[in-house]
Image (cartoon, rainbow, N blue to C red; front, side, top):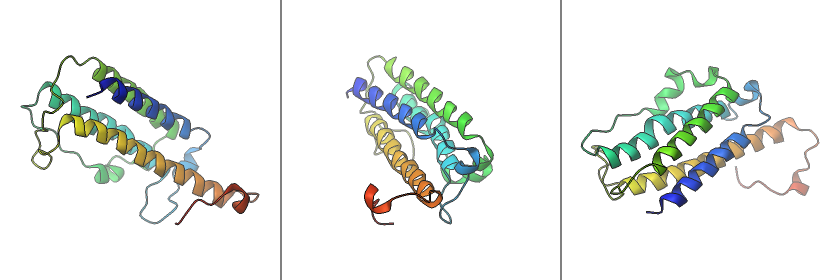
Length: 173
């Protein structure tokens, strides 16, 4: 397990999240561009909760206290119960970045641990701590793509001088 590579990647992706929120108002961040899809603000709130209550907990607890059962999570339900779309994008993004820094520091502080330790969770026992750690990176990339698409669609819908052909094609909808 290349902990330095993992930590460097997670740290860089945290900065990407910070940069991708720049210049977006709360009103823009609350818009649902498609029925049933998350708003930009909901994506950032999801990232914040996943950082604190999913990936960091599941990886570090598996490595340091593998006998303890992992807590359940409800990412879909939290969108409504935690009122994601009523929050402030700037504040939530600041929380995402600070929690990511905390995650990276905690991962870097781990001594010799067994990265092949399986998760203590009824549905996830086949996954190791290493696999979940790298899934964290993949999860970030999926949401970076989602955030980029939301920003692009908002830009295309609200910019009358946008030169579609000259800029290039986004791809299929």
